[in-house]
Length: 73
Image (cartoon, rainbow, N blue to C red; front, side, top):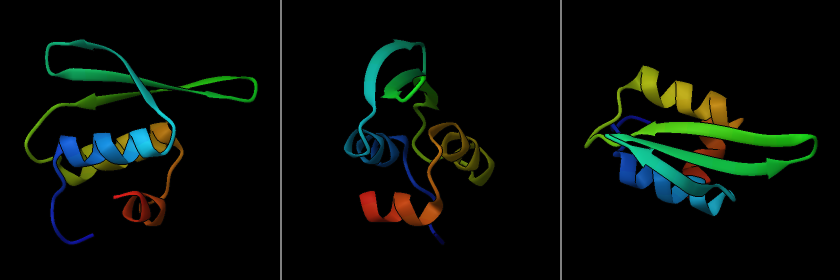
C-alpha cells in the first residue's frame, strides 16, 4: 500500500467489513462490530492522512490484514 490513506477511506472500508460508528469524541471515531464471544472496538483518528503506524494499529484492532483492507477499499 504505497500511498497514505485518509480516515474517510478507512472508515468506509471498516463499514463494509461490518463495523458500525457508535460515537465520536473530538477527532476520534469509535466503531464496533459484534463477534463471537463479544465485540471488536476500533478507535479511528479522523485525519486527512493516516500515518503507517496508525493504520497498522487500526488494522490490528479490527483484526484485518492489509490485503483485506485493500479489497474493501
